[in-house]
Amino acid sequence: MPENTPLDHDAQAHYSPRLCNEDLAPTRVQTWSWYNIFSFWMSDVHSMGGYVVAASFFTLGLASWQVLLCLLAGICIVQLCANLVAKPSQISGVPYAVVCRQAFGVFGANIPAVIRGLIAFAWYGIQTYLAANALMLVLLKFYPSLTPLTQSHWIGLSALGGICFGVM
Image (cartoon, rainbow, N blue to C red; front, side):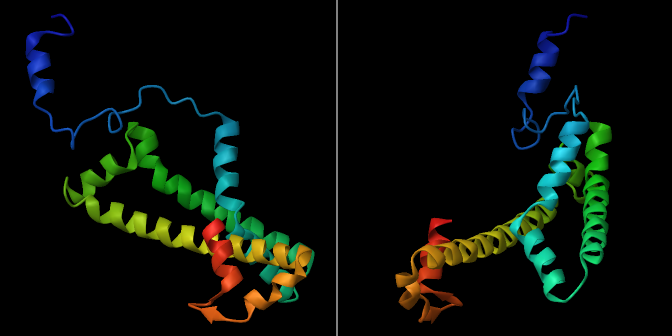
C-alpha cells in the first residue's frame, strides 16, 4: 500500500495539535557526539550558582583540593541525574513532555511541566540576582561615585542593585 493513501491522510488529519505535532514527534536520528554531551554537562556546571558554591567553599576555609573534590562530586551527581531524567527520551526519541504523558496522562502531564517551569523560573531569578550583584560590584569598582545608590534597600536590593537586575 502506498505511504500517503487517503486512509493515512484522514487518520492524521484528525489528530489534535495538542497531542501530535512536529515538536512532539519522535526524533528519528539522534546525532549527539561526545562533544555535545560534554557541552551539555558543562552548561549544567558553569553558572553563577556554581561559582558562588565554589567561592563559598573557599570562604569556609576548605583547601583547594577539598573544593575540587566537592565540585567534582557535585558535577558527577548533576550529570547522573540529568542522564537519568533523559534516559526514557533517549530510548524512545520523544521529548520530556511525551514521556510525562505515559505516567501522568495527557492532561496530568501539565503538572510536571508546571513544576519544571517553576523551578526554571526560580533558578533564572537566582542566576539573574547573582549576575546583578556581580555587575554592581564591577560598577562600584570603576565608578565609586555610585556608592550612594547602595544605601537604600527595597526587597533586598539597593537602587543600584535594582538597576543592575533590570539590565541583566
